[in-house]
Length: 468
Image 1 (spheres, rainbow, N blue to C red):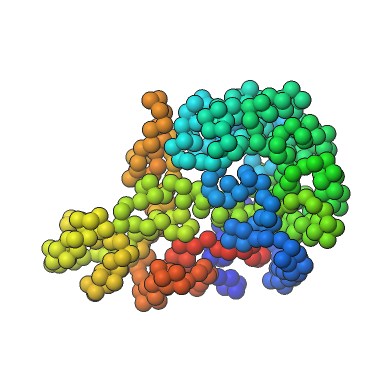
Image 2: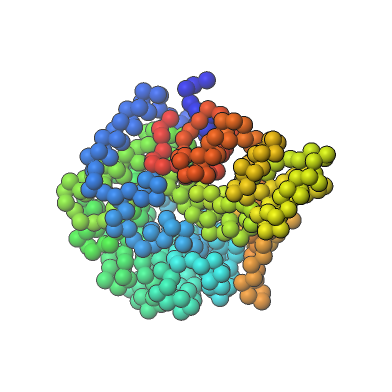
C-alpha cells in the first residue's frame, strides 16, 4: 500500500488511532526525508565509531561507563517506585499528567508501608530500586522512609537512586538521604531552566550525581555548554532521553517544528539526532563525562522484555519455554477424537515427566520443544501460541495465576494472558521455528503477518528504530 512492512503499517494505523484528528497536525517525514534523516544518523554513528560501546541489543549508547542504576535497569533487576503523581515542575515535554498526590505504586501495586515494599523486593530478587514521581521531594518524609527501609534491609546488595527536579532540595534533605544510604540522585535540570544550583547541593555528598533530561532539539547549543559545566561541577553521568509524543503533551510539542516518526509510539526524530550529536560533540571535544542515550526503543523493547523475564517463569508450565523477548512459548496440536487414546499413550512418558499435557476433553496435546519432532510425526497441524505474564494486586479471575505472599497482610498475583491467537506452523513458519530453536534465526520484519507475530514474541529487535 505504501511500501511499509505489515508491522510498520500496523504501527502507523495504531498511531493514527491514538491521536485521531490531531494526527493530521503532526509532521512525519516523506520517504525521502526519512532516508535523509537515517543517513544523517548513520553518519553520526560512523563518526563516533569505536569510541563508544553499544549495549542492550544495540539500543543504548554509550554503555562504557553506565551508572549502576542504568545497568540494573537494562538487566531487568530494578523496581521503580512512584512515590506520588504530583509535580511542581512545568516541563513542556512531560509525557504524563501529574496532579495527584496518590499512593506509592509500582506495576499497579500499591505499597503504603515500606515494609511490604521491602518484601516485594526480596521476593522478586531486585538488585536496584528507584524512587520517582511526580516529584519525590514533595513527599520527602515518605521518600526518605522507603530509602531507609530498603537500605536497612539489604545494604549494599540493593542500589537505590532517586529522581528529582531539585526545586525543593535543601542541604538538610541531602544530608538525610546521605545518612539513609542513598546511592545516587538524578536531576532533571530542564525543570529549572538548566540551572545547576540545586544539584550542586548533592555533589560530594551523594556518591553518584546524575543529570537525566530529554534531548531537546532547540536547546542543543545550550546543552553543549552544559556538558562542560556538568563535568567541571563533578557530575557523574549525563543521560539523554528521546522525546516522546503523548496525548498529554501533544499541545505543547506541536508548538515546536519537530519531525516525528512512527513506531510502537510516536517519537521525535530531532530529539534522537540531537542526543547523538551531543555524544559526538563530547567525544570530539575530549570532555570526560559519561553520556548515554536512552532511546524510546530501548525503554519500550528492552526494559519491558527484562521486566517480563523477571516473572514469566513463575506462570510458565513445565512444557513451555520463555523466549528471548520474555514471552511464554507453547507448542501444541489438536488430536482428532478417533486418535485421542492412541496419541495419549504415545506421549504417556512425556506427560508423566511433565514435558507434555493432554486434555482428553478438548483433544489438545501441549508439548515441550524437545518433543517437536515426535509431534510432527503424528501428521497433525502444529501450532505455537504466546502468553505474557503480568503482576497484579489481586486476581482478575480471567487467567491462570500464581499468588506471591509478601507478608501476613499483603500478597500479589502473577497472571498469564494470551499475547496473540495461536499461529499454525505451515512449512515456512515451521522452518523458521526450527531455526529459532537451533539459534540460527534472528529478528527480521517479514511480509507474513503470522510469521511476524512469531518474530515479535521471540526476539528483541536490535538497533535504533527506523524513521517512517
